[in-house]
Picture 1 (cartoon, chains in turn brown, orange):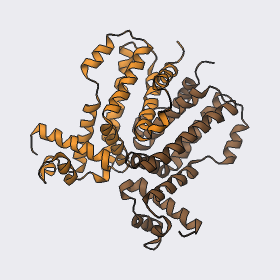
Picture 2 (cartoon, helix red, strand yellow):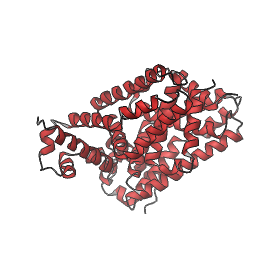
Picture 3 (tube, each protein chain N blue to C red):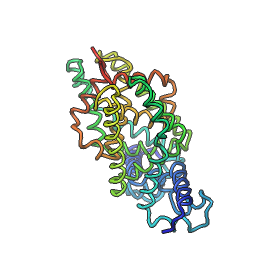
Picture 4 (cartoon, rainbow over the protein chains, first blue to last red):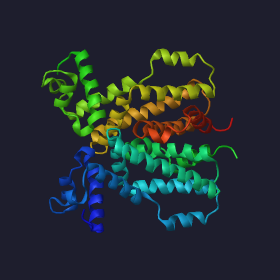
Length: 191
Length: 191
C-alpha cells in the first residue's frame, strides 16, 4: 500500500464527495480518481478492496465532523447549564450544514451497512462509542440532565439533521432556535 | 399507460424491494421486471419515466406503512393518556420492523431527493402533511402534550427507527420499552 498520507486523505475526501453525489453504487475507484484528479489506477493502489475503502472513508467522515479542541474548550469555559447544551446542539447542526457531503456520505454508508455486515459492525461501533462518550461527557462536565437526556437528544438530533439534509422543507418553516430549545428543554426534563 | 392495477401494485412492491436491496442506483426497469417476474419491458410500459416511477413508489410506501383503520379505532377506544402515546410509538416501531424494505426504500428515496428536486418536493409534502396530521390528531384526540410534544417525538422516532434499521446494534442493548417510555415522558413534559 502506498503511504503518501496527503494524497490518501485527498482520495478519501474525493470518495466522500462521490458518495454524497452519486450514492454508494457510484463509488468506484474510477469515480474517485476522476474526482480527485489523480491518474487512473491511483485509488486502487491506496485501498485494497471496497470494505477497506469504506472503513477508511468512515474514519475520515468522523474526523471531519468532530468539533475542534478549541471549540470544545471555549464551550466548557461557559456556565454548565441548559443554554450550554443548546449551544452544543447548534454546534452539531452548524457542522452538519457546513459539511453536508460528509453527513450524506455517512447516510449512504448506513444504507450500505444494511447490505454489508463488515461495514455495519464498524459503523455501529463508531456510533455506539460516540454515544457512550457523550453520556460520560455530559456527566463529567456536569451538564444538566442524565443519561436518558443524552439518549433522548441523540435520537432527536439524528432525526432533525436527517430531515434537514434530505428534506429541508419539513424543518425550514420552524424556528430553529425555538425548536432546539424545546428539544433540549424536554430532553432535560423537570429540574 | 397500462391500467392493470394489481400488476401495477406488484411492480411497485418489486421496486420497493429493489430499492431496499440494491439502492437507488440499482432501480432500473430491468431490475423491477426481474424482481416482479414480469416479462422484460413490462415496468417501462407502466411508468413513463424515473420521476413518475419514484413518485408512485413513494405513494405505495405511504400506503404500506399506514396503520389500519381497525388498529387506530382500537387504540382510540383506550384512555387518552401517556400510555396510549407510548402504544402509538410502539405501533410505529412494529410496522417498521415488519416492513423494513419499505422504510429502507424510503431512506433511499430521501437520499435520491438530495439529487432530484422533483422527488424532494413530493417527499417533503408527504412528510410535512403527515406531521401536521399528527399534530392535529394529537390535539383532537386529547392525547397528552402539545404541538411541540408531537414535533419532539417526531424527530426522536425518526432518529430511533433510522438507527434500528441501519445500525440495530446501537439501539439493541437498550430496553426498548424503557426507551420509548422515556422518549414519550420527556416529549410530553411536566403535567
